[in-house]
Image: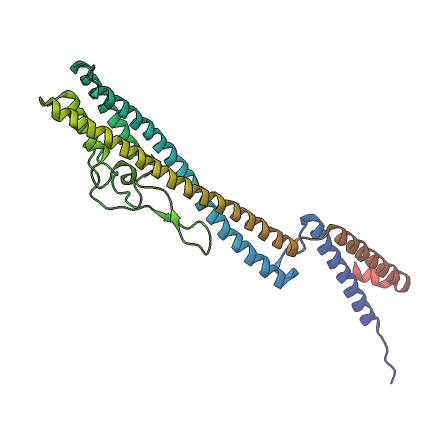
Length: 301
């Protein structure tokens, strides 16, 4: 039985081929314009899903990196503050030594006491320093300052260092140190010891007791120097952790970026070749139709 190909079938087939070529050309031109092989999920459903998963992982990495950088900045501020505090303690030790000297007159001791009081206020300012709206050395307790701004008495509320997770799949790390770790110990705190030093410098009427009190204040100042050194060492160790984490996170982000690029980016040279071939195929199809059936052009219009 013979089959006859009608003009309608021929026209439909020709239009389909032309539209297919034009769609392919449009897709390839879009790839060249955007530099992307996948511009919409329908271009490659599996590839698009893989890229979405990669971008989700990158967003997670970006947040962890922000956490690590924020902790790093806070630690830098804490280290700087404790460094200034150490300078204050060094000056306090010098002044107490002068107060212990037999050549220092009572008038001189009174002047020293006044300066120690001023230094005490500066130490209190360090203890209650704020960073980004929160107490730098307050730890998890942010409802009140570590030490009373007027009396210098330590807060009765317990506290501990805040912990922040800076890498996926790892434990949270300490975000700093609390004021009590370098401004006090089981014996006393620096404000009580400075108050005792000021009282001894101004004299209680018992020179022997006053000298003993000053000697104790000097020894306590040495303790606070050691405590601040230990605090800065802890901060330095945490900074090393955060900087290493930031470096790893940056590397992971770039690695994911490369993986996404391998999936969704277009190969420029390959795309140009495909575009040239598709344009040639379209021209050949149009030429073939023009030579065979003029009426098809009328149909296409």
